[in-house]
Image (tube, rainbow, N blue to C red; front, side):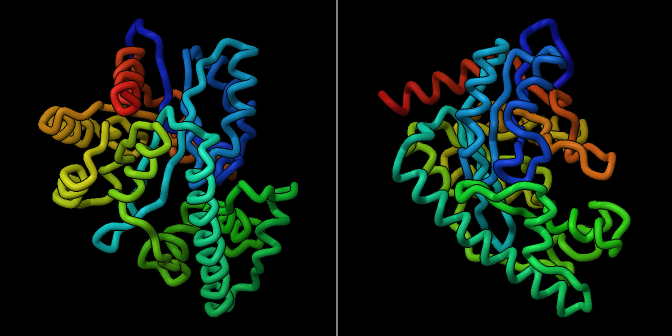
Length: 289
């Protein structure tokens, strides 16, 4: 979305609670520096970074929207579902997310075995050591962490090469994992009091699948504005959002800076206004009755 004079909100950011580079507090401070009114913390399969972000947001005047990005699968493709304004203390949600992280851990171990089978000398412990800190039980490792290790060991020049050669879907190091459906993730989010949104549909390369997910899962919105969406994609998904009466959301998908490169986009480079945030609040209020 192009910049306006209205308040800006980045609704898709990651912290080191999953595969981001920054602490939640650092992301909040960066949002303040960039003049954002607020941001959503949407780590992969965890809500571990939200409390710290909210404390910092209250301190410096940045509105924090509690969120999550749940990993799912449909038609053989990895599909991500964002959830907003959900109850991050919901015990059922926390148990379900813990189960997803356990599956992610098993996937990471298989990726390491695949890389070792290709003759690369790398261990999961080396990946963890590369964090420079202890990994909390409610945090998760992702492929970007493994990519970092490959860079540091000299097997690839940067993260992009790590994914292009080894870690992307269809590459020799990639490992699929059993995942829940997008519809199930949306139900989990609604049951935790939140509003589900389909993340970055342009990355799936299958608009008919996106339509099928919308019709089956009944999300509140679709992420129209994303760092990996060009203008044509934005217009296409805006039309789909209007067709299905969905909220058009957007965010940078900021993961921080790795090897001098911002991944996926700089914080605040994609955003929505207060009107969109208010529509998400209303969707949640209607859900909660």
